[in-house]
Image 1 (cartoon, chains in turn blue, purple):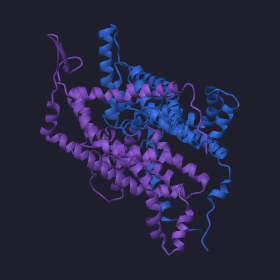
Image 2 (tube, one colour; image 1 turned 90 degrees about the vertical axis):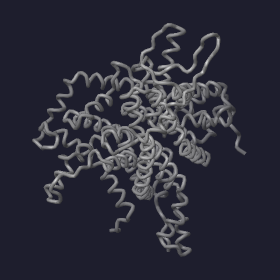
Image 3 (cartoon, each protein chain N blue to C red; image 1 turned 45 degrees about the vertical axis):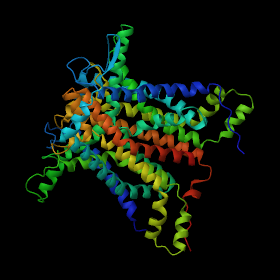
Length: 285
Length: 298
């Protein structure tokens, strides 16, 4: 047996630090006692209670809808953006373009949220003045906000895959007479499919998780799930919240398994030399 | 020589759709924030006065510096900016100290295990930050798991006040942002050539010296990317200080939220956002160039 080195010990401690609070949360969600800190035996009472909570269930439905549309739009825009950044060497405003695509990754959410809200308010004034149309904030504005910051994540994931691709396959297709759009759809898209799927799933979770942007740009009657949870959590720890949080954790775990499956397949395909070759290290004599 | 791909016919279309979207919904809003930061709060819908007034066939523009002057006069804002920067700096350092060995261990693990470790690190980032922070509320509260465990062990007699202090904020921030440090560091460390370390050792450097002289300098880009991914969002963080912090926790994200939602002072909130953006401009530019350079290397 090899003595575990320092970095492995830190890795395991780090993983323990990350997962222990979540495990505790899940265990307490099965607590029969109303007092969250006292153990009163096992029960699924709080989970059954969730189903009767129509306000919460409506928020879940709304959040899932927004997440679905966000992921779909973000994948379309993000793939185009990634393609522009990796395949088109020169165009006017390229620096600005790549800046606009990567900046939402780090931009504090309160700034993005505030600025989008002020845009929507200005837009409503303009529409009202020129067309006499009233423009209300709601699911549409949340969708726009979520799509805008998800595009950045999709663009990063897809462009790293586009960068690895062997461009000679695309060139061969075009030499054989395929127009660029056909080459893109029949050659490029199948090759980057795993990262497109990963980008879609990532945008879906990003949208489902967001509290700050949604709080700024939502309107009356468009409360999302995180907003419902936030207003309940502000008042303290509650058993119902433990249950809904555990359901979300379970969904994310299933999603993680799915990602493992996708990545492993993509990894095996792109890895030409056998894995032993890459992981074997020569030991100095 | 490698032949460059002929530009697709729909080139303009490919560029202009995402370009237009990001311009309209990411860049343009900042211009509006800047504009409103110069206007005056009013009891109206929307709650600010117009900047441009067209009357008597003349366009008058009233630029009101009052919001910015107001920010300098109240020491609360000054303290909140400094507090945010201090908390972000300490969080980044702790994440780096904890994340570097973790990323290093993952990068040296067998290839199929690397993927599992990576997913274990990424999984929390797919879970709402709200839920992860909420999990800590239950653990840290006065009659929570940590205090009751310590008391039943006889280590303390009265519960420790951890929730609603800066300690809880640091725990929550490190917990929430650790993955963002580990992932870019791993992406960098996994590309290192192990023969370089062997060469250093063959030339007489010890393992520790070889690590400091070879591995650390080579991983600079990963350190920069990870640190920026933690530092910049933490400066504007709202959820963690709101739920885990107390009255002593002064962070600008929370102050901006209160100005906007509680005081309904949109112009002051806008001015706060503009100053925050100005402070973050240097780290954001640093992050952007670091990313661009890494992308070109490929």
